[in-house]
Length: 64
Image (cartoon, rainbow, N blue to C red; front, side, top):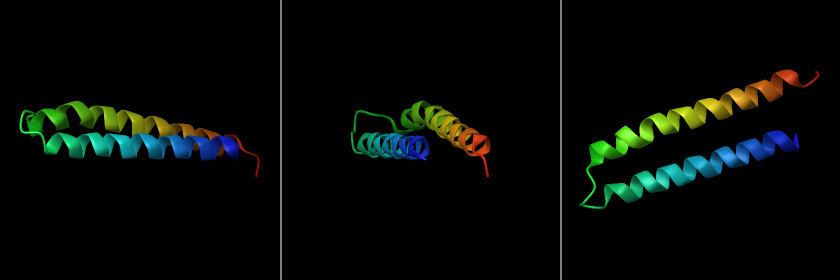
């Protein structure tokens, strides 16, 4: 149970920080918005997919 909550908390922190960086990048005139999506999009998908796989694996390994 503790491991799942640590994983969920870490996932929340990562998502909030990535969204913060994305929103911060929108307001800088020197940064091209299309470049933000090119950089953050694949990283965001990889992190979300990895954490979902980790949480699914923990859930499957628990006895009923």
